[in-house]
Image (tube, rainbow, N blue to C red; front, side, top):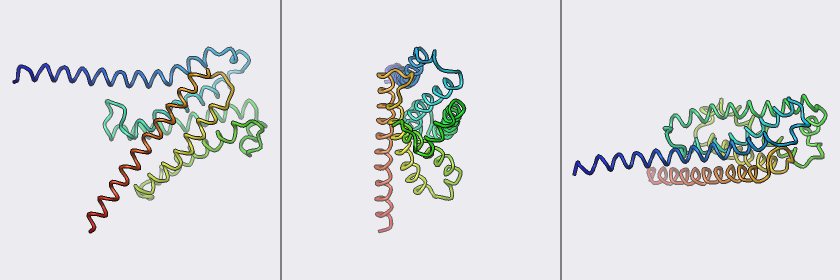
Length: 220
């Protein structure tokens, strides 16, 4: 029996490694391909460096929105549950920084447009979705500092509700913006962000219901 167990273990290890490599490669491709297409856009020739930086900060923020649910759900191989949560927290901070750079850069290049956007007075259809998503991101970052006081269940419900706003607002905002992002790769990234968020939230709701059911049975 032992003569077959070692090759089987080696084969299984190789399969897990191959699967993990494919998952990470697919994630990197989903994020990097839209960035690469945007970097090659001829529209950049007419923009200044601050505006370009702001635009790419927005693209990076959209990519991070894909990573976040995958981390917290434990879908990314090679990361323990604890490490996944820690990375989720750090990526959340990076997401806030990316949004600040995005908004700050646009403010520097065109303050009147940003004022209109923040006051929901902008004529551009994409602005209100981006502003709503921005405030939801800031709200999550603020509430994360008080999550222990809120309690795990309350924090999860609030976080999930705000995540819905963030994902929906970010995707609609990105799809409506006509900028350097290539249409197909942008749509694919947005679809992946939506799919990941829906999958993770559905799993979380299922686990919360199972936990509540188990607690009720334990009290009986």
